Amino acid sequence: MAGIDFGNMNCYLAAARNKGIEVLMNDYSLHATPLFNSIIQLKNGDIGMKVMYLNEERIFTPEQVLACLFTHLRLLLSKSLGADINECVMSVPFYFDEKQRLAVIAAGKIASLKIRLINEHAALAYNYGIYKGMNLPKSEEPPKIVAFVDCVGGHYFDLLLRDYFVVQFKEKYNIDVTKNPRAMFRLLDECEKLKKQMSANSQNIPFHIECFMNDVDVSGSMQRTQFEEMAQHLFEKINLMLHTLFERAQINVEDVSDVEIIGGSSRIPRIKQIIGEFFKKEPRTTMNQDDAIARGCALRSAMFYPAYQMKEFALEDPFDLVMEASKLPTEKSVAELLKIEKDMQAADQRATERSDAKNALEEYCFRMQHTFEDTKACEGKVTEDVRLSCLNECSEVLEWLDMNSTELQKKQIECRHSELEKYCKPALSKLFAVSEAKKEKQADVKQEDSNQNGKDQPNQDIEAKCEDENVDNKTSSNPKPECNDAEMD
Image (cartoon, rainbow, N blue to C red):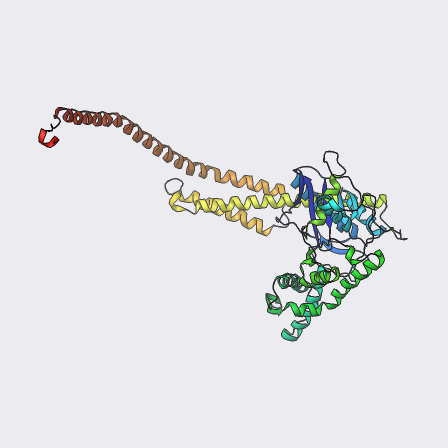
């Protein structure tokens, strides 16, 4: 009962549990999982990605790269839900053709994940219809029309800003950012932050990047009005799409009762203004602008399970898929890629276990160094030769780890860890044995003091009681003063 929003830049995970829809977090406690994490430059037009994997140059197909991502998402879902997840509902862009959809399904098979595909707008409709569908049309009435522009989105606004500052930095700092892929990526990331800040602030927004390229610090700034002028051609595409939508649907703008917008770029004030002016009403943002599609996928997934009582309705996409003549992964090739994927998972698992063993050994060495460097704590408990010997052994182990960090295996590290523990154990036993003896002695002294105080307490109570009785006797022996008649009068 899981849903995945497969976006252009990020992926979002959601699941149906605890009588609701929950958006899940990744390893970094974030809802958004980046779709790519590295820069790959292709020198030819072949479809493939050349990367270094396990000190070996490998070429991965797009299906393999997607499978790596899906495997990571599947593990995140399994970890969050506490069960092995092997099927889900995933959204894809409306304009994906049959070939692209089958490639996504093939990538899911490689990742041992059974995928049910729905369109992004369909997932949004499920999310909207479940919670706000009281006044929707009849269930048998199909959607009117779907229009889209595949070259307008948050990423294209980021690219626009990046290209602008590439020119600015070349004139201002005499550096060509296009020759450094890492610098281009850093600039793109900074431009995305700048875009988000301009959506919330109309003032001039500065930014600064240290050691950007060739040890040069760069800075820049931009206002929202300047950004809107630069992106005017993208805003015009949105306006054109809205006109095309109503021309093809053959309905009037006045017939629309509600307008809901989602997506990260829906926060840009100019886009809200364009939509509001076209529909002559303020667009609503009552649904989560980032997680709405993932929630819709999770809702669609929950409909397949009878344990969840869901509102019965279905959604038909108003378009036909056309199969193109192209080469798609066969069952045999998928099986081969699945074997490669499992081998890669096993290699990743070995690398993780090796890293954990290395970190555990380093932590133990640092802890021992901290213990035996305290001369005051070791004085009178272990000899100076033993203390220095333990410190030298820890230093040798750390040096051994640094010199052979890429060649050591998990068993070798664990064996050295065990040897170091055996070497330091006698000294630690003496050190902590003396400490425990002191603690026991202090505890015995405290117990004796408390017992002595307990014995003295009854005597004190008796003396106090006797004093109180004497006071009472003295008080009772004194006659009460008599009042004479004069005083009475």
